[in-house]
Image (cartoon, rainbow, N blue to C red; front, side, top):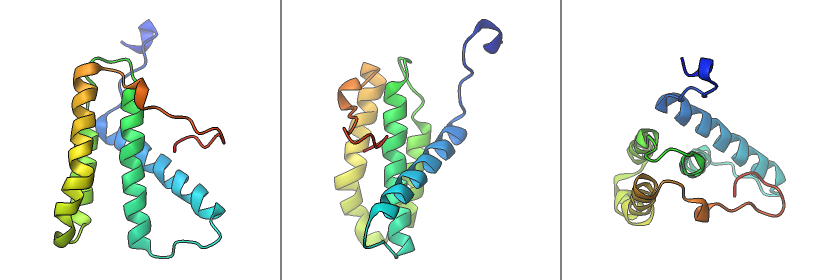
Length: 128
């Protein structure tokens, strides 16, 4: 029905999360190809990709014109990421990442657009 009226259908959270993970993977690969010294540890590469995916999800949700975006994909990504961490690193992750993402998600749900958090690097990299 939505397409008949010129409205784009809503993307499912799992599809949205997958698309953002693919974007993050592309970003990491672009940066990796520029680096003289390449990152060889695949666990670290996976961690970097998942963290960038969270950033891409937040940025994309902040650009949407909905008053209360569906943040379930971000929560799923956080749970998935935490499950891959060494238990000794969970406290640090909670303090440095999780608390801040929860704060931003709260802003997404109460204030709608967060255009003040958007930044386009002058060198045209799509997401920085």
